[in-house]
Length: 90
Image 1 (cartoon, rainbow, N blue to C red):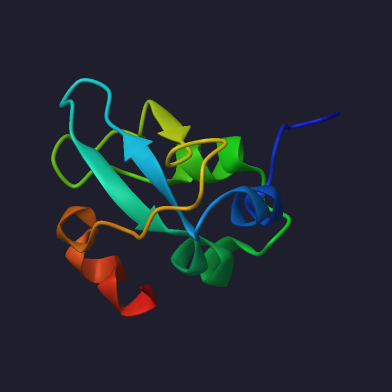
Image 2: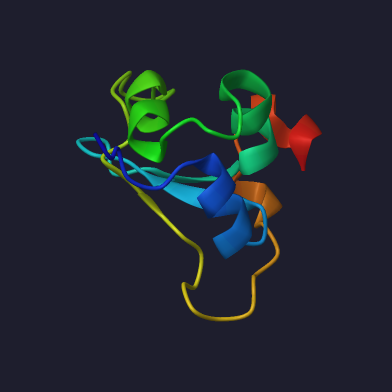
């Protein structure tokens, strides 16, 4: 069963980070992929990782992940949008 792209695919397609887009609370955070790889491994499917994450505001998983500027030159991670607990991975 194909579970979609994994963390290795996301690392290849981005500058090392993704957007976690909130659902009910509407918050959006920049997530360094190194933090997710350290916890779940390169082969972890993005969908499974998303379901394991919890928003610090509403406690629910992010509604979706979005690649930063898909198809363009990778953008630097916006540090002001990175959760404080993950800043060591930037």
